Image (cartoon, rainbow, N blue to C red):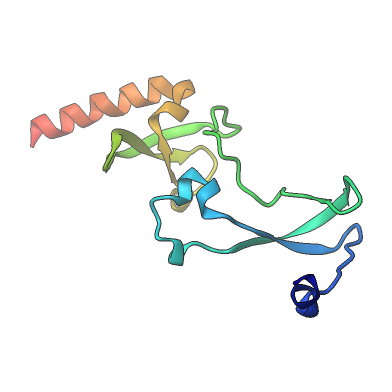
Length: 139
């Protein structure tokens, strides 16, 4: 059996600095479960090899991946909040997001930020709500 299995396999050696693809297994990622398996990417990368952990296991530099946690500290400062929206998804409680105009950046660089990530800017959120309430009552 092994003879036939090894017939089309080849031995590969990776050096530090080589770029490799990482195979994704959809059953291991909760975020990929609602998506049909035919639509999920099979490989992610390329990532550089940083070094070897053991004889056969190279360690990969997964620095290209975005942070999965919500960013709670901003280097930028909110100039004002332009709009808000409520995101509704099945099986997930509704979440509020705000369109934020950042100080020192053009309005085209405004971004949607989740309400729980803007805990530092409660004053601007309250000001936006007050302005929004007066705007809707005057109409």
